[in-house]
Length: 275
Length: 312
Image (cartoon, rainbow over all chains, first blue to last red):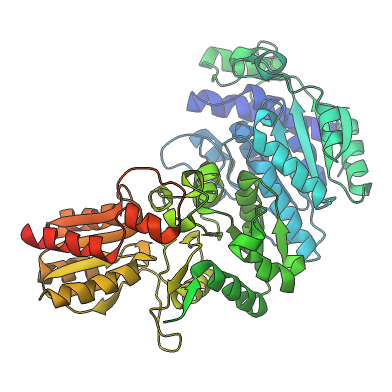
């Protein structure tokens, strides 16, 4: 399904769910969840071969949320996709919830890997891609990294490994929103030029607008056609996208909205709907 | 007694496992000739992944393979496996309870000439404190072969501590039975229990003979699994002997000594004397010289046993 209009509607739903679940939990990370909405929408509602009724299906495509603090966008997508009932979203970060503060594969149906400690996910995605090649399976592995996250050295170890083992069944996205907890990525610890860096590490690199579905799909298709190397899709995004007072505001990295702010955000997103 | 390093037995065990189970894969961080994973790589090159000098990535890649049904054995030196990649082991392997086996070689001070930077004396402590982790320290080649096979059959993360230097073969390859979490009583005695792990088991057996000459009957128990520890065997033995000595080629903080003390303090308080590296870094030297210098010989165990018995 590449019904862009429909996907745009799903994206709005996910954004509303993110806002509502974070308001209810009163803690969590809205900014980096909202910046990745279109990427996850494209993957889960069009591209990826997954079965909500069989979350551990051996032949499924895999997704590793390397930037695990964006768990709300993953949970919203999985719930919308039908991996679990949407009522769970309001239990985010609460005692006994299947929705932990950062994703845990053994708690949440549909989560392919536990993440949250930055820099570790790409290595795991590599392992999944190697397993696919060993077993001659055609599933693909997707990973989503944050641009602050790539300050972690392990990311570059994994970048070497993916190229060394020619993991062309791996497509990674860089959520390039330019902000991290302490400020602008370029000021805290400059990671630029990210495109040149991944190219130098042996990756096929595509730069897109990470909120534009046409560009996301074009990049996904291009990645699938590339042989012998992994692809990094550098998705230029806006942290807090869709909620004007959160957009490009560093303070919204790890702060939950108040009830009033929630209502304001939902109004801006087109009003209340059932989460 | 024949002499073989536990890492040598590891290489042999991997090749056997590789033949039996096509899901067994092996990863190394540029030390395959030393860790002996090169033995596996020679026979099964398509199932061997050299990750280069990148221990964090080593553990993460192993975790990813495990999520897809593979049984990865990840190897490097113990100090790098458990130190450099501690948090990867914690968060990417143990928290999701993935079926990764970390077989780390060159543990302890018998690494020898490379010196303190390469002598892991903290790894047992680090690994046993992580939930979901099983910790095994084989004492000889026979036990290593058995432990590697048991680890492959067990589902969940396992840390296996292996050594660089040759050690005497204690167990009979035809009759020895290994069970994860089940201590092995090697000698019966009533005066003191000597709990030993890894290469210290053979020293403990020597100490048994020396104590016998002095008129003492020591009980010698091989604690090859530090976690889950065989609390029943520990308590039952000390209930009989009334005191204990622990022996490990590891810091006296956090390893076997601590584990035994925890069990006894909660179940059967008794005097314990710990033989191990006394919270200090090692140095370069020949393995035997280092064992003597850091107090890890049979003589040191005898001395500790006499001290423990005097406190009863």
